[in-house]
Length: 161
Image (cartoon, rainbow, N blue to C red; front, side):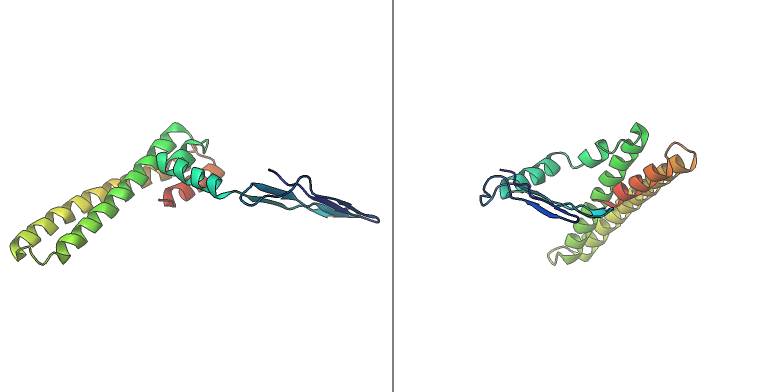
């Protein structure tokens, strides 16, 4: 159920009671604009139920790049942003794998050194690929493919996990 409350202030004080009853766990929408002789401020508060919050979290997990797809950025920028996120995730996984190898006391020093060397090499490749993708995204903003606002939006999306 949605609850809407409105309050307007001027020379005369007007107040509108909320519509319907509020139940626990329901969505709530409160709008409370106030105007005082030519100056005004408005505020909106939206609360989702636990089920709504869970659905939003599930949607993000099912498509972690939905924010990129809904950004309105050109396709080339979206592809680069998705690649950047994928590379960051792979780098994080390799770092965790290297920490696990380093912490493994049952492995001989020679085997451990070989595995760490392989992981370091893979991390170097992933990091180089990440830098290339980031530079390509930067070129899009410098060559005019992205506006200043789109470049800022792309930067914010690239920083998210």
